[in-house]
Length: 127
Picture 1 (tube, rainbow, N blue to C red):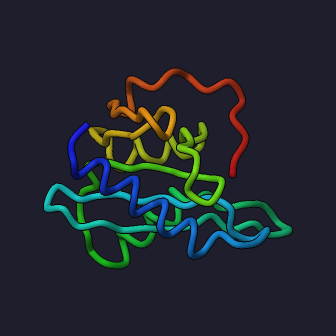
Picture 2 (picture 1 turned 180 degrees about the vertical axis):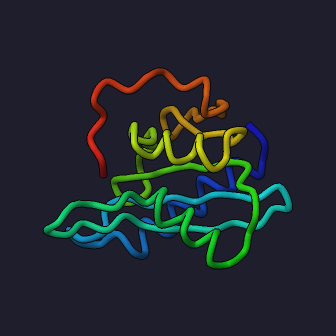
Picture 3 (picture 1 turned 30 degrees about the vertical axis):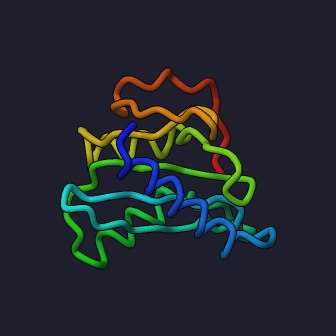
């Protein structure tokens, strides 16, 4: 894993620790552009359904005209756990950024995989 990937995990963890302090926001995501720009987002729990942190991060990238996203990481437990994107988010990422890389694995030994190489989720719930 590159230093820039470790920094992306740290960025997502920092957002999780700062913004995921209650039931409305429990997961954070950070994505990097090929130029090194980092964008973040948190999930949103609400009565009509939830919006994943990946979706919010993609929306942030779009509103800030960030262009392509190269790598993404999703964290939970206030930055203490790396999560794998749910099925719906994988589909969204594949549709918009087919070459994106995803940081996965345990927090102490994360690794990077192309999104297309992630194992198929077995009914992974949305977050």
